[in-house]
Length: 320
Image (cartoon, rainbow, N blue to C red; front, side):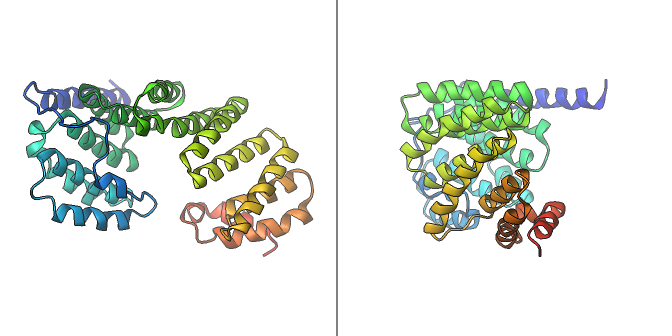
């Protein structure tokens, strides 16, 4: 048996063990809408995990009289604030502390534990290990009849897998989100459309990617997710450039530039796309100022700094 097959088998075996441990007949039943958020869920700021940690610590200090499920779910989200900062040892330590109580927790609380354990492994590059946990999380969420966490588990399986498998998980999640009676679950649809578009883009199926990116825009708008809508429109422009529709891409990026500058919120990625489109149209002198602006805005961006070649190219094309 080769190493890959052995790893996959271990992942399946782990999922079976988790199922045996968590899905016991004596598990408690949730006492509220299984997809409803907890009070601490409402203060999540995924872009500022350190601030969210402080908030969750405050909830934790007052959680003595709360139910076991409440305390388990709160701790899973506290762990997530660490995994978002790549502090996986700290995240796993918090999750380890929950293990003795998990068989007494509800399927929903178990699902949230499994999701965060899986996210820790996936973010650390151990996606085979994560897949078994996400499968177990999906089973627990289905047992709880918690659509929101069913969709979350499927969306994580789509992230942890590749190609057609990823598309299948995203489509299954999208069908549940669109049919759900729960508003919070329905709001997954915009993210799933975006993710499907990303998968198609990675496969070079740009026409389908464009279709899904465009489908997400009205949903972001209805949700009042202004930044998400802005990013979604950027994805459309990026795809148009990939399709060599440079004039259409330039027009859209100019609209985004006007919007962001009016709000005094410069975005280096928009400047970069303006430069790339003009360069593709053989207008390097016109592109220079946008590459210079892109370099100034992105030189301290962690994602761009992780790619020194890209950063050096921006600097060179910006005449710096």
